Image 1 (cartoon, rainbow, N blue to C red):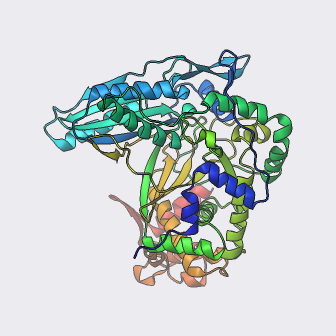
Image 2: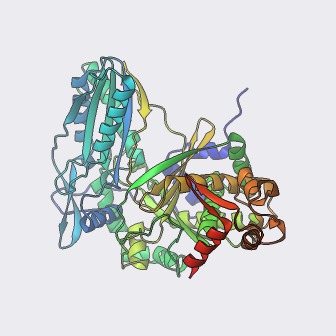
Image 3: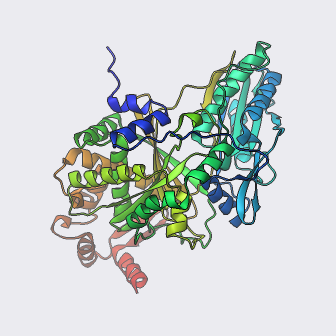
Length: 544
C-alpha cells in the first residue's frame, strides 16, 4: 500500500492562485477580487516592475547573459519538422510576450507588443558524427552556445528555437528566452502547448484545443502599475525598510578578490542529499510547525554565517507571482524576489533559530506583493556594480518536476545543458524529485573555485545532519559542520595533525606543533611541501 501524500504535498500541488487565496484566508486577510482587464494596445504599455529592473541592468551593462533562460528536450522518434514549425508559429501568435520588445520613453521602460513576429526554427545537423559520445558533446556545446547568446531587448525576438538532428529518429530541441519575458512556469506552459499544437498539426487541425487567455502580460503590467500606487505600496515598503534596516553585504571568504564589476560568470556543483537526511529535515520542520523550505533555509543561513563570520544573514528567494487565476497559463515574467533576514546567534537553541526563520519566511511572504525593484529603490538607490543589491545569495526549493511534455509519436526527456552565467554570487537550489531531494550550488566563478564550493556542499550536509541529530535544545554554537573525515583529520592524534586539540583552540594546537616538531611536514600540494616551521613563518608574514 502506498503512503498517502502529506498535507503539505497536497497543498503544494494546488495552482499558485489557489494557494495564495488559502494563505490569505488563513491569515485573516481580505481576498482581492479586482479583475485584470485588457488595456488599449494603441496607448503606451508600461513594463512591469520586474521587467524594469532587468531593463535597467541591460542598459547598465549591455550584452549580459545572466538572465537568459531555457530548456532542452531529447526527442526520439519520427519528428515532423513542418509540424513543429507550425506549432511554434501558433505559440508565438497566442502569447504576446513572445512578440514583445522594449524601449524607453522619457526614461521609462515600456513594452512594444508587435502584431506579428517571425521566430525561425533554426536547424543544425550533427548526425555525421560516427562516435555518439563526440556527437553528444558537440550537441552540448551548441546548445550551451545558443543558450548563452545575448538578446537585443530593443530588436527581438526574445524567444529562440533550435532543433539539432542527432540521427534519423533522434533530435534535441532547445527553447531559449530572455528572463524579461519568461519564468520557470512559462517554460512548462510553452512545452505543454507546443506539444498540443504539434499534435494538432499532425492531425490536420487548424488549431489546438487550448484554454482561452483572458488577458496578456501587457494587461497585467498595466494593472500592476494602476493598483500598486505609491499610496498602496507605502505600508509594504515601510515593512521592508524596517526589516532590512542596517543590512550589510554578505562577505564570504573568496578564492579571488571581488572584481569591481561582476561578470556573471558561473558554474554549478550538484550534490545528493541522502534520503534519510532529507526525511530528517522534513521531520525536524514538522516538529516545529515549519515547512521543508524553512529547514533548508535555516541550514543555508547557518552555513553562510559560519563561512562569513556574520550572524546577520540575508538570503533571497523567489516567489512565482502567479497568485491570480488569470495568470495561471500565461507566458511572462511574474517572479518576485523576497529577502529572508535572520540572525544565527550562536547562543540560541536550534528550536529558537527554526522558530525565528519560520517567522521571517511567513512575514516575507505576507509582504511579497511589493516588487523587489521598489524595495531596492527604497533601500539601495546607489548601485554597487560588483554585487547584486540587498542579497548576494539565494535559496530556492523547486517542486517536483512536472511530467515530460507530450509530443505525439515522440518520446521526450529533459536534457541537461551546461551554462556559466549567474546573476548572484551564490545560490543553493533544491529540488524534490520522485520522493528524493537533490541539491545544487550555483556559484560565481569570479570568486570561487570548484573545490571550495564542493567543500561548502559537504559542510551544508554536515550542518544538516548535526541539526537533525542534535535536537531542538542544542545550542547553535555547538552544532558542527565538519564531516567524519574532517573531524578525524583535525582531532585525531593518530593522524598527527594537531595534538591535544580537545584542550584548546586550533591556533593553540598549531603553535604547540610548531614548537614540538618545526621540521615535520605540515602540508603537501602536488610536489610542494611545507614544514610546520615554514608554514608558521609564512603565516606570520601574511599577518604582518
